[in-house]
Amino acid sequence: MVQIRIMDDDGEHVREIMRRLVPLLEGSDDFVLGTVKELRYSDDPDGARLTLDVRVQGWPVYERPARVRAERADRPSRRSLPPGRR
Image 1 (cartoon, one colour):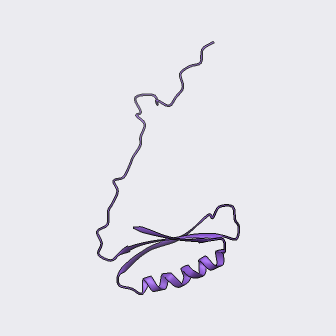
Image 2 (cartoon, helix red, strand yellow; image 1 turned 135 degrees about the vertical axis):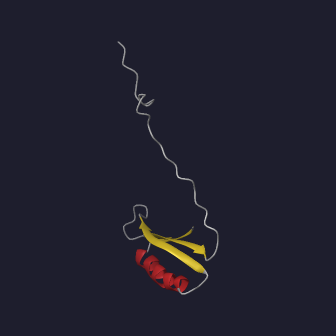
Image 3 (cartoon, one colour; image 1 turned 180 degrees about the vertical axis):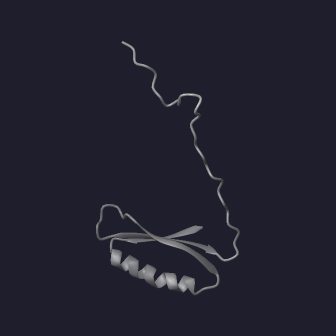
């Protein structure tokens, strides 16, 4: 999905824009909406960063292959350090 990000130093303004934008997009048959997330906005306690996932209705969805990382049980991990020497 495409991500729309709205951010500003005035967090209440950002939230109000998102409160008005989401119903407009939901009322359209052209879009499929995902979740709205609020992310940390730098170190400004008054600011806000909101993201909204959206895609065009009927657009093919690209699924990324899942990545799996596993350590072998029959060999020690390569990350372990060699024994120390004096």
